Length: 304
Ligand SMILES: [Co+2]
Image (tube, rainbow, N blue to C red; front, side, top):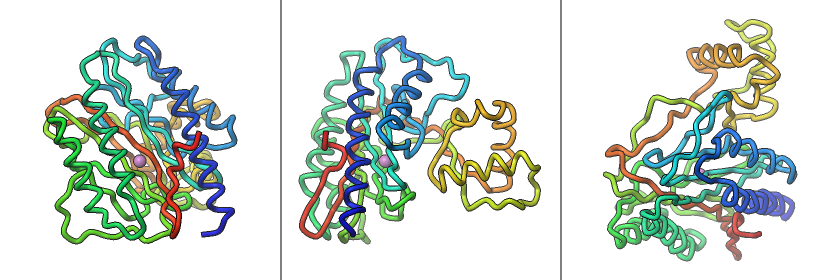
């Protein structure tokens, strides 16, 4: 990996680290989710990055993949547990990080469980480590608190413009054919802990999308304005996730929604339904991005 690439990866990490601080200050009961997401995303832009994906604000038993809609009126509930998961892209070089905030006074330990699991997992990372070893450590740590790791959510390797580039970092042990993390590699480790069953299911809401392929000027089955819209998304995002919010000013919200439904039917777009703990358990999440080089390990989202 070239020094210039390492620099851009670290810059993305630094911005994500600052954005996480901002999130901690901003998220409060009574605040609109829409305002929080917009504030964090604008902050990322103002620092010279772009959101790697729409800011996720997942509440209570929602584990992941809820980003406010363009006309969202939801507010952060009193006595809730809130996960903010955010990502930064600097010229396609990525950082991914998340925090959990408790407003109930009940879930301090649940948060500690995922945070300690993350810290221990990070300490264990070395070049060529097996991913199953990381999963083992996460599972053990979360169980030592009396909670369950969410077994069907995992961390992931990342490459330029690709948020999930092929290798999963499990939150449980026991995987037999486990890949090794051969440097140079960029990974996100993201333990989720719950007092529920340790399994997420897809909910009804869909708020996050990505393109499945490059869009050309002469797509069949789409009208002129639809093509302009999809090409614009491709130029800005490549295959990185996006939200209707980012386009609902230039185009009408109805047009954006209709086109996304149509594009999903044509398999030009894929969506990520909100993920909810199967027993409606409370969920905590901690996440950082780690760059594994031959002779250095950098926790990019803690460099601020
Ligand atoms: Co992630």
